[in-house]
Amino acid sequence: MKVLLVNGSPHKEGCTYTALCEVAKGLADGGVESEIFQAGATAKGCLGCGYCRKAGKCVTNDCVNEILPRLEEFDGLVIGSPVHYAAAGGAATSFMDRLFYAGGGKLRFKVGAAIASARRAGTTATVDQLLKYFTINNMPVVSSNYWPMVHGNSPAEVAQDIEGLQTMRILGRNMAWLIKCIKLGEENGLTPELEDKIYTNFIR
Image 1 (cartoon, rainbow, N blue to C red):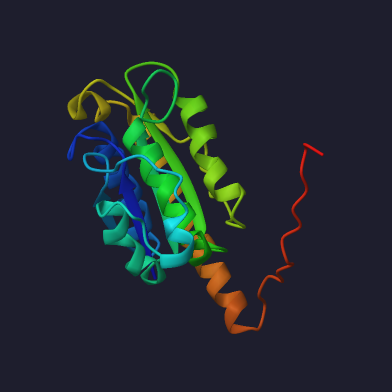
Image 2: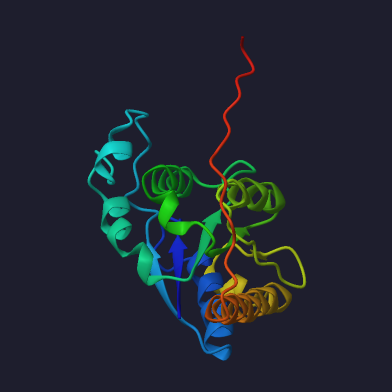
């Protein structure tokens, strides 16, 4: 069992990374491996060209195409982002847009979670935004004992947010628990049923 932890910050070992490391500790406590994947420095925006629908990969060859072939290795996904103007950072948004367009089918029914880091505010709006990728894709969402955020303007300041770090660890443990529950259900023949998607138009 393994979880992909996506660092959507352009800073490889900054505040978001510090929070993801705490999530990794919680996962490890629950017996689940994890891998932190740096996406925030290189992810480019979606071109809306539809190439990925036919090719199964993005026309832009960057970190998204690097991780797409590996999605089946993971049982869960955590996206972490800094707050930029009360929203997820542009790189994190670009990464998730393209990952889900090209590889959403490989993530269906895997567990998901989102975390945010900020100096002060905008964290709940950021988490709300990031959770929408999971809730449109049949993915169970993992929670913690508080909204999943840390505060600080540097990794050293985040290290002082002991409540935020505890929230990250509990999130990791809860994710490990849910992954195990799903695995147990699959071993006993319990799997979700899919229906063909019904599309309706607002403009007639």
